[in-house]
Image (cartoon, rainbow, N blue to C red; front, side, top):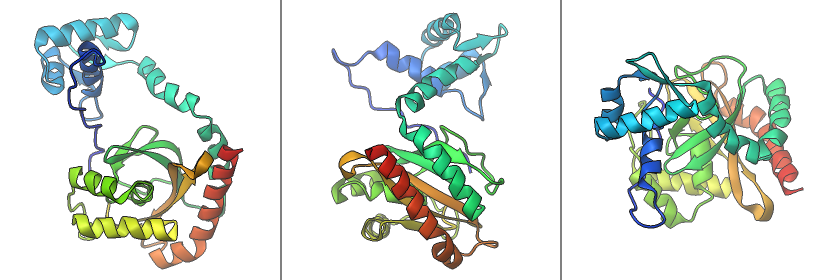
Length: 263
């Protein structure tokens, strides 16, 4: 399964919309694990631009140090990480959360992650792994669909029902495994369940053999700002065992982080 890319926003021409800046972001987003090095033609095609337009943007990014080229192929430089870490450094929540997550991983001996909601996806903002348990590589900035992930359903549970339905309908709901729920009404019911019980367990809907459980992280005023989860292998930790043994420390960790944010 490929990690999904951020959906391009609908153009909104006008005084408050800088089209050239939006096109620059599309050029940056055209690079991925599947296309780390691209020709000018490939960048233009992926970004939906003319060759001339893509060339101007690439040369600008190259001048600023965000792109490099060997004369034929273009690629991003490590400086591009500044853009993502600007978000992380502006949110002290993640500095507060990391030691709590590390302690949780030491206790349950499974990987722990934190994610925020972005459109129909979740975006990983912090991850403390124990071992590789998924076929896809996950790190800060990785995106996964919200509809079939435990953190996604917890985060959707923080929205009004009308907004939940809108985002579920807008999702590209695929049967990623034989367990994946794709029906909008059934998914909405699972989101309401997550809201009611204050946590969510997803059993092998994202990937065969992967089970995860998530809880909400709230900021001041009780507004949900992120979700925290534990992931493991179903053949090693059944959903029942995960709920019985790992849910209590997960909820405690989520409350601790929420308390730190509120303070």
